[in-house]
Image 1 (tube, helix red, strand yellow):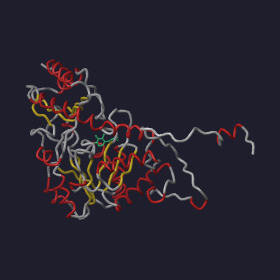
Image 2 (image 1 turned 135 degrees about the vertical axis):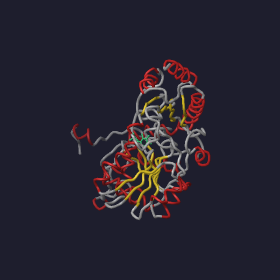
Image 3 (image 1 turned 60 degrees about the vertical axis):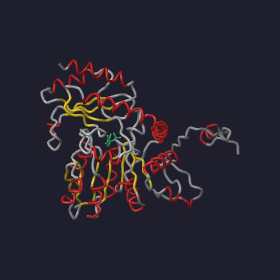
Image 4 (image 1 turned 90 degrees about the vertical axis):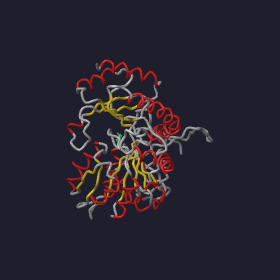
Length: 387
Ligand SMILES: *Cc1c(COP(=O)(O)O)cnc(C)c1O
């Protein structure tokens, strides 16, 4: 049957030659997925069980990224989400119901805390916050209805490294699941499942992406029971991730090891240099003894990354700390670390009563891929200007 050109636009007879084999993974986009016949049509989220049914549950590009993250974290399966924060909320919606209680460290990523307090509370779920250094003592905080225990190690901004195995042992004794935000360790420097964690999430936005140009998250679990619960919630919440962004994440994975090696070296050298400066009271870098929980870092981690915090001496005013951040030239000011550009952000713990008593004196640094001596010179010139 001869076709009108308008029909040919939609149903072409011409095609590119086959047999292309490249090192770059293909980007499969798609909402509609074609079925071979009427009886084969079904809307099941589990693409591993039934094959591909709908773009929401992932195209080969999304599921390739999921499989690769899962392999690196030694998990059972992984879901990709539109961002790290979506990974956090997905876990809560998958496991929690009215009347449940969760335990969250005071050092948790702030939007996770806000989610627990402002949103979960509306659904009749109670969150209580525990000191991140609690260790096995968490046993006394667990209740009959405690369903999830969150961990984040090291914690956001204040950097406490947690005794995750001790927390996991106590939680499991009470029948609670242990969830870890594994973003700082990039899913590779802390083997969460070997240390008792049940579910991990990462902001792939950070080290896996590594170039500050997309948002994605991941949720990885150790068994099929959790996979079924999270998969259903992933479908019902509509947590679709862009295959184009997944392609960028797959590209990021190829250079993750060399980026992390360079960043680890620069960050550690700068942290040690800062610790010797007269303006600095405390350096909160997990690989240094001055960081709370350093002993757990030494025991459980195989490397460190590029985010750490510095606490200025108490005679320095908030204006002086802000001037330090403003006078930096290579370090930029902004959220979402782990890219190639160094960043500095000043925080005020005075307005967050449950945080350690660092007041206005704490600044978080993200070390990027600039030359370390240039970064040191930038820090030095800005510290000099504080006088
Ligand atoms: C950035 C971040 C997130 C959230 O990731 P987004 O992709 O920005 O939504 C979650 N946890 C930690 C520890 C983070 O640093």
